[in-house]
Amino acid sequence: MSHPSKHLLAIEGLEPPHIGDLLDLAESYALLNRSGKTQRDLLKGRTLINLFFEDSTRTRTSFELAGKRLGADVINMSVSTSSVNKGETLLDTASTLNAMHCDLLVIRHAQSGAPALLSQKVDAAVINAGDGTHEHPTQALLDALTIRRHKGRLEGLVVAICGDITHSRVARSNVHLLTTMGSRVRLIGPPTLIPADADRLGVEVFHDMKKGLAGADVVMMLRLQKERMAGGLVPSAREFFRFYGLDAEKLAHAKPDSIVMHPGPMNRGVEIDSAIADDPVRSVIGEQVEMGVACRMAVLDVLARRLPRNR
Ligand code: ASP
Image (cartoon, rainbow, N blue to C red; front, top):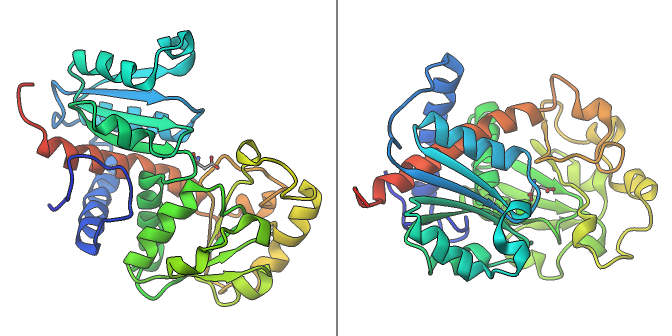
């Protein structure tokens, strides 16, 4: 099992064998989870702290579940109950966590680079659970695993990532992972929501949904991230849906057996029509959540193997 670092801070920098190993291990956890045999003692005696400075439903819960299924002691710290509200800095929080001998630290933060900074200050292995607009590596892993289960491979697939690319750490991690694994990635969105240097990422850029979706194997929708917009980038939700929202008419341009994905939380009627989101054949959104637990188990497992014993 190869992993190049003590931490998982980003997909960028991982090579095909690192990603392939994580996905294979995650697949075995997915099968184990489905069989109901979930109790393992791999992380017995290890402490996992979930440190979330931004809201989360799926990611925080699935890291908690993943840690518990592997036998770790799991502690959830949310900002509202921590001293951060009393002015404690991120690095002060780090030394507190260090003093508690935490083994695995999962962090989400609004600032890009916060997990990397923390990783230099704590003894624990740090996992980035989403930092600003930078990366969300475990989301890209669970997306890749879901795609691989449906399409049997990543190489050569046409994957269209649509909507608010600029503010999306999910898009960034997915672009790195999918291009590394040989997929052909297209970014589709209005010019205001696609980074100016996107073509340097080895992707194709489209501003027209129908053209961009033509022949796609995978259609990945993103949430319109209003909380990260300075304003004025999108005329109105209604207008956005008309041009960039996924409905049956636009989806008809993708391959007939294409799958539809969304990392959640969804803005129904803004970036995706409810009928598509809930389509039992085309939508794999529920399976993405299921694969999230399996991928996070794989990441915890791989990082824990590199930790010293008896800390
Ligand atoms: N849940 C994902 C994230 O934290 C996607 C989103 O929020 O739209 O980046």
